Amino acid sequence: MTTSMPAQIAEDGGVMTFPSGVALALDSGGAIERLEIAYRTYGVLDEARSNAILICHALTLDQFVAGRNPVTGKPGWWGTLVGPGRPIDPARHFIICSNVVGGCMGSTGPSSPQSSGAPLGLAFPVITIADMVRAQAMLVEAMGIERLFAVVGGSMGGMQVLQWAADYPERVFAAVCIAAAARHSAQNIAFHEVGRQAVMADPDWRGGDYAAQGVRPEKGLAVARMAAHITYLSEAALQRKFGRELQRDGLSWGFDADFQVESYLRYQGASFVDRFDANSYLYITRAMDYFDLAAAHGGVLADAFRRARDVRFCIFSFTSDWLYPTPESREIVRALNAAGARVSFLEIQTDKGHDAFLLDEPVLRDALAGFMDSAAHARGIA
Amino acid sequence: MTAVREDFREIIRLVRPGSRVLDVGCGEGALLELLAREKGVDGRGIEISPQGVSACLARGLAVVQGDADRDLDDFLPGAFDYVILSQTLQAVLKPRHVLDELLRIGGQAIVTLPNFGHWRVRLDLLFHGRMPVTGALPEPWWSTPNIHLCTLRDFTELCEDLNLTIDTCAALASGRPARPANPASPLETWRAEASLFLLSRKR
Image 1 (cartoon, each protein chain N blue to C red):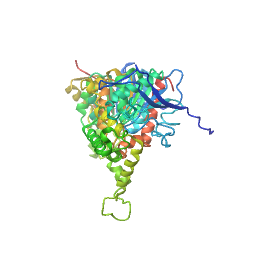
Image 2 (cartoon, one colour; image 1 turned 90 degrees about the horizontal axis):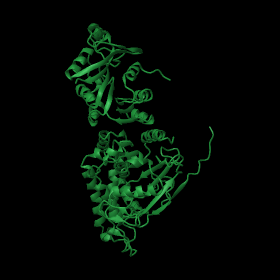
Image 3 (cartoon, rainbow over the protein chains, first blue to last red; image 1 turned 90 degrees about the vertical axis):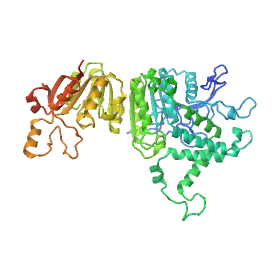
Image 4 (spheres, rainbow over the protein chains, first blue to last red; image 1 turned 45 degrees about the vertical axis):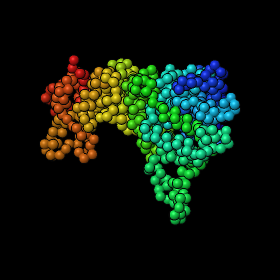
């Protein structure tokens, strides 16, 4: 065995601004002119431009999927699956991740300025998952990549993966959809509505105009995050982590954070408002609620995948994920089978809930590695 | 190179090159891989264990985690040329429904199953009065996954009942090459330890 220094991983990124005339057409009927997409790439595009992997991020994540996040100084959010020696490896793949349209990490969104210079706020149009994907397709095309080796994502990222396969099947060789669904359930819409109401009930939201007025609806956004965070975990995980453990000796006989789980949630809420924009939260949750892939195909999900027969699909779910439970993934698998697509599916045993897709799950990592390696072989890039 | 199982050998022999195959209960994908390599089939699998599915993914096979009782319904009629169910029919909850499903989604079905009418089984029951434990049925009654055992005669009757034709029948014995067998022969109902059937729907 010889040890060697890890090769320097090429890392690049910035904001791609599309010229006026190349507008992003929106499902709502409008369009976004001079679209800006903030993105990050890792690794090197091979000469045949055949090793590009697009990673689609979840609701509150960003383009900093690997390496070190230059904004927070923390490691990228998917270091368990993306990085040297991981299933998605910048030594072999050209990895692209872009901030979704509507986001707050550099892509056009509600905090982008209007002509007066003030943030758009609610003047920003309502966007959809398909709009996000259309913007990604523009970015990938501008990079000169005709066909992605793979599109990979979890949660809302998984929704984008499905949308990619439905809208641009000829541009995708392999599609990996983790802990997602082909449509948002009533329960998921309900939780999002609680979050949005919390934001909008904060007097500092100011009808979405908070930035111009020099305030931020931090309390409302924190509550939204607290409620959402519960849905990312599981009863078993919460019990294991916190049980009924107290913060201090004895009860306060008041409304301080007596229980550790309360303190944990408060921390999650407070730290979230430092990194996320309240209006972006409204817009992106709305996009997820509007997501119903079958709707555009006469209500028949299989029809969404009719053109995607040549795409190699891999679908993953987690046993304790109650936000996107396994039956939702099975629904996707059933539709893909009915469409005659090439699909693999694995449900992973874990008590960590929806969050498992971001955590170190060896079964997920190994299965994904197997899938990616065999797909690379089939694509001729192994 | 490990030796190829004799039942696999026989299945590989029966399958037309380049056909579409679904292997129900495909384990770690050994048969699907052989079929792809030797017959160029377009193979899919269903497997219940996560370890099996993971192993199949690493082999580049398209495999869905699921089971025969529940997940065959997802496939379109005639989606495959062959559907393979190896040593599994006796372990499913609804064998009749599963067998019917195999020939809804496949043009032909390849089914292997143990013969509970094998002479050793009959003698075991006759002389010891106990549920037999044999090479084809290695588990005691309280832990066996084989909840719907049948004899060769029972199975041919079910095929008749479901309007299925037995296109090919072979007797299987562990470690020995498959041997062509006549499922209607009374001798065979004693002799075959396990059998392989190639089935199609009567037209």
